[in-house]
Image (cartoon, rainbow, N blue to C red; front, side, top):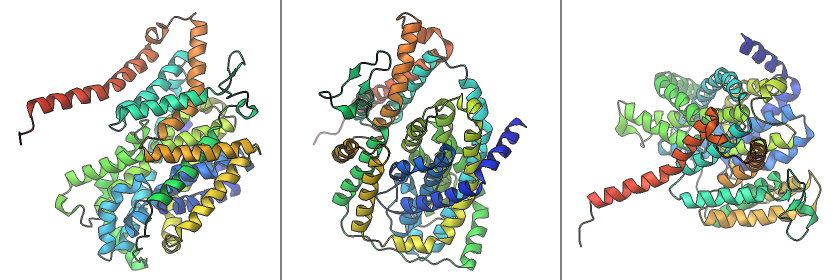
Length: 507
């Protein structure tokens, strides 16, 4: 009953005229961002983040969460009509969405994607509401030692569950940790890594500047180079008869959408996992349990519904560890975490005690954002189809202007503009070299927390490192971290044994 009472209080915040307007604006912008190839939820949140200073923190997080939600919806539009995912989270949607469009069923595919996204979002928000308070209560037992072990777990999750190139992931984490130490020492107040006594570095490396640089400018530079001839947009029209036909087909996909929603939510909770693997896993599960697995990849509507339920559910799931533990579950939630820190809020279990209006206003807004997103998505699909024909040169210019203005506005320092340019070039080079950017952002956000908790523990325990294994909760986190860190080595040993037992035939 307490949860229901808190949720009702949250709706009093989320359905205020200002926040309802913000939700509508956010999901509309998010759908547009998600539909444009080369953009995505990470880029959209990074670009819009500076604008949040003109509204209260609760409205600001609602805006960014609505953009995040909308981008999950919008990614399916370009996947279906262009055959190009608006973001990596919509890759699996192209497998059957594009063949449906080529068969003249683009309208049906878009309806299936929108409704499936709504189902996935609804189920995941309910699960979020149920699990948020118990997880926050458990986290109240955390001290500095547990905080350090938890942050270490977040980093090792990126290492253990990331891609094959583990060395690059570790390099990016270390680079982010180094950048997080720029500025004044948190204990002594002495300047560190200020590059020849440059005044602009005394306040440290701004998370906002880094995010806009690598995800805004860097992504534009990379997309300009990799984009060639614009692909043709498949025409799509939506009629009431098509809408009814689509909804009737959705009723036969309840098992696929239910499994995708639950799977996506729990995969989204895991740091470094996120919506992309959730969507791919859901697609694989749907194909394996289907009575017609051979139809997947040839225009099966279930092949659209499965990944769309999962990626929307995962986007909600990734918010849970961010709010309750202060650990982001995806690159986009890492940006949201940085935004909360900038607004003077401390994510974690105490947020549920000290900022109940903020937390439950956000949770209730997820319900309204989900309803708004599906209505806006279906109503404005013709507009988004038209927007996909926008010359990319115009879109690039708009994004670059927003990046420069957004980086300069908060502190009005040219130092930040030059830093954005530098990080933009660095982000482009790192992307070209196939270095992951998410660990860099995560390390810059969590680096100060990791340093503070470690030094607090060492001061309290007089330098005794055994405290991390003496305390039960931190010991569990340290053990899981060790296991995750060793996973790449275990995979490497298994591959070596497999090659030794199956040697390649001599030529």
